[in-house]
Length: 197
Image (cartoon, rainbow, N blue to C red; front, side, top):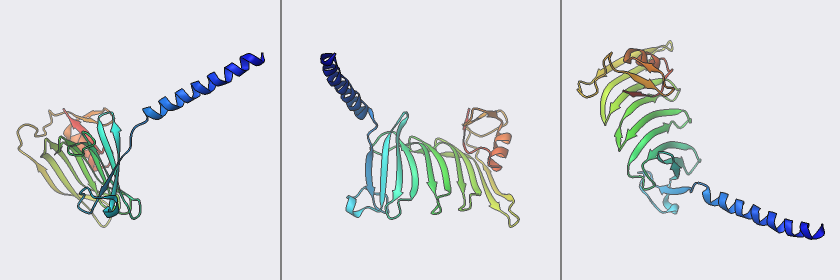
């Protein structure tokens, strides 16, 4: 019995090391970017912003932080680690860490739903873009009694994607709604993004 135990221990240790090494190599690589106030790449010593990025299923995501207080400024999605082509969601934050805006890009063009909030968390703008062109925009104002008032509405005559009641909008949770229902849900804060079909 003594002899079998002596052989068993090295086999277990070797198996553990092989699993540990394989697990270490399979982890996602973290990319670090140092940027100045103009969001230009600079040496670490000159940086005011640090970006920390990693690969995702659909591309590459970077979280950008203020180096002074480690506060998250915004996150952006790109096609790859070169950070040349925005592709996916962009979320920016106010200094108080509340969400400032959420927009979507497709090949560096605004594409999809865009929403902005004030520093208190009240929605101020919402829009739908198609390949960089606004197809529907709404601006809101918060009244002194706390209610929202629509200030401006813009429906672009861009023929390829003008919203009509025949359009179908699919929300993030998969619900299918008409433009009128979608706008009502966005206005009341129930939906933050959607896709047009």
